[in-house]
Image (cartoon, rainbow, N blue to C red; front, top):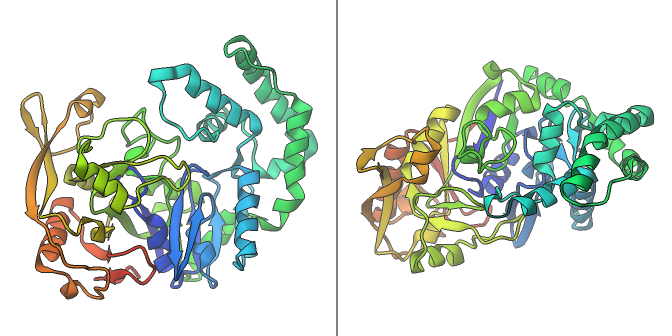
Length: 427
């Protein structure tokens, strides 16, 4: 049962799209198991760049079946727009499968998300305003709309009415907004039904049958470990479980079927949105990382906050995900620094702490303790093997591997699909 989970080992934006695309030619199914169109992947194929927000990266691999699992929340307009854009560029999207149990992001979810963030002011979470959180909240509150509901107008109307009974009270009385009409929402959602119908399937059955037939299934997480609703830097997190356990619930497979868990790790650290970030840089080095690394959110368009590599976070990701391998990305961005600091521990209230503190307050006050490693100036984008890298670059990778607690099996040395050094096979 060759089932692999591929996920972000930091705060997201680590380069999961490239890693998934690299494996896409060797796998039969790529499954998104959580998140929504708040997650963005950039994949470079030849001279073509693709920005994916909701679709699995495997959509770009002709022999691969892309799947949107039950744990994903789906904005139908975004999904159809993304499919249309790829079709116009000659990408075949006909093999896409969409779980009938995936929840729909409704227009009122988007409205609630935006007005709530504005209302919170300085206390805002830093959401993308795309309705992701409110949709997951509806799911947990059992008033959510699922893809399958689009095919029963009576049930859909009842569910929208139930959801808006409370939401309209909040919108009108707390936020001074106009009430949302039930019939308008139902009409809009029903308008997507025929367009989505060719893709809707019992994806849990499909995926498990594939594993029983020894086909290779890759489960692709959005965001990253430190944005996990349970294991991230709460409350500055997403509303789902990007960690490895989320693949089981978000795709409907048992944990005994997972054979490998690959963490994507950037050679430095970035995050988007609010929340603590111990190694964040506010100087010329931070600006250089942002500029050279092209650190702008694929989905949000916001500049990413940049900092040095944080080994404490990497060790934590190894532990909570049961990582078997790391894929280290963007090593080339560090070319040109004479010395490269690496955070090996934190100082909290005058004490050295080598593991991620469970206390939110402690993490907010954590100061990085750095070790400095020698840098390199040689161009590494043409390197095809680990031995092709300069000695200092090899030493940097080895140091990160030792600090992080899992082997680094692949290294990204450039943005292109072929600009990757594979040390150990993932399959």
